[in-house]
Image (cartoon, rainbow, N blue to C red):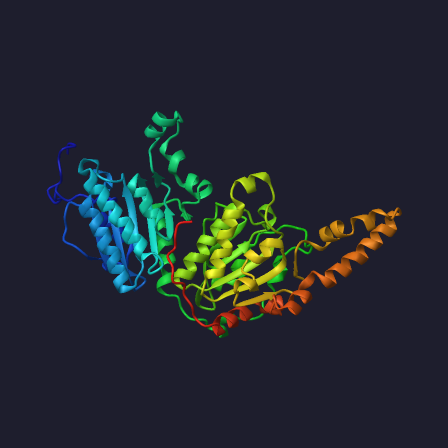
Length: 476
């Protein structure tokens, strides 16, 4: 049999479908045989369907990378617009699968107008229904801003997001870089923060997107009885309050089945944000991570947390805030990098939010960062603290060193100076720090036992009136 010969029992016209075809990609995302077209088949380069994910309805659209690299013209953009509008009408999540070189150059202004209308539809839907973008190949030019306008961006290993490609960059600036370095998963997962989730394969992108969608389509209700047996979460912290630790094990033990879908894990990692379930209810988690920069807030982490707070508030997802923060990170770079402007975003996000939001102070909460991390003054539903937690302008030792510098310097004997220092520390802790003072002022509601953390937070959420913000989720 030569290379040109086909066995008689095989139909030579039968070929495997291109994995980039919208029918294939949408079929891999959605429940089997659930996709139903929202429009007649055409050559627009976009397919939009209704379908199911784990039995719950969603709307999805996909650019067709097999036709002109997925370029968007007016008809394709209008399919996306109508898909988004359908999702809003039905109040279901909408998911976009992106592999597109941007607007069709040959169509000129017409394609640009269509893309602009698509952006407007995304903005109108923001805060009304969850919007998730899955980038599976290049998303260039106008197609880069489509995912950026949605709530969550998932990037596969082959994804490339950029406004102008390497050739244009080289021509205009002289910088030499390839597509991956310019807009690949590392660039957007660690440097820019554009990507919320980065995965190695297309299949993993679908799996993670399905799980994400479930948090929104099946939010659930708090079932306090499912909290389980007492579990001492403080055992996960080091004995010394000065030692750093990774907050992820604490989060995993707090949540049901240790399932935590972290967002933007590689960007501004001193704050951890993501979705999970607590006693069967979808919740958003925000936590300082002492393993990174000592858990300090800085300009990028404040901006990261602010966007997450606004997303959860706009979509009605309650918040749980785990606080162990020594303050804002000082430095010229921080001030010039906009820590005042970006830090204000987090203050604004918490202060305007309407969803139930519970704060737990595990070790410390100092200075301006105390306010920013969902304090009572910003309207927290409840503020709990573990027994050894401290709430103060700064650490007790540092405060004593500043307030009593002259008194300590006047004592020549080192032993006597150390004894005086310890006495002053205890006095200062009694009047300005420690959790007892915070409770007397009403900024902490209750000291709770660490082994009751799950059940106490669950009860607080269950007893809180439901709320949801009335605002969009602007890409901060």
